[in-house]
Image (cartoon, rainbow, N blue to C red; front, side, top):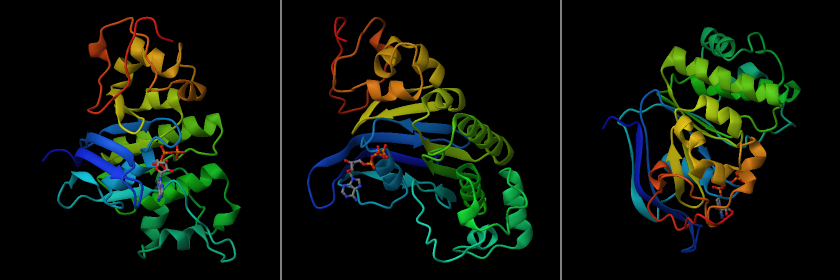
Length: 262
Ligand SMILES: Nc1ncnc2c1ncn2[C@@H]1O[C@H](COP(=O)(O)OP(=O)(O)OP(=O)(O)O)[C@@H](O)[C@H]1O
């Protein structure tokens, strides 16, 4: 298998119910690819990530991970016990002790050299995200998985963080799977974008997706960034001014298209 991770018909239910959170997701990520998952709140982005990592049970379908695959994961939320003082250096050695030179190299690579002695609670949001990324890089991963890595950052911080991700990909060759709400930056930085709303609504290269009329219908005319994400509704009809072939539907995609809708 050339893909690092592949899912077929991935379906997950809300725990203890038969209510689907995600249905029939066919997914794959190739070595070196940057793939970003976008979608409204509650659309199943984090659930997809967790299912691909094997952290939640599947109701149906399968996930295959390449044998020996090393993954560096930055979860959406990291609970810090602020009552326990912890330096960046110590944090980098959790759960596995790493030598000083590796810790320093990881911090340097993510643009925060010399922060080792700093308390975690004294970091800015952007510095903390970079420390999390440094920790994820310590295992020399084939695949970096980042769930909303730029939440809480301002616009320059977001742009700088994505630039860093691209640098890391270039330097290490690691593939990157990200969840993001930062549509404009996503469009610039990703090889492929997947739009979820309980199922795969559409996917493709950013260039392809951003020029498709269906993209404008999904994300707003002009695709004016983050706000546009909240304006689309996949279970409404989409404006169909172009060839429908430009808009790839996942299996189970239930929304219709109409030249007159919206
Ligand atoms: N452990 C859980 N128990 C019950 N429901 C859950 C659990 N985890 C997720 N869900 C539900 O599954 C749905 C998808 O949640 P998920 O966190 O995957 O969405 P998301 O797209 O990542 O959202 P956001 O953009 O807000 O982070 C939501 O309706 C959520 O309430």
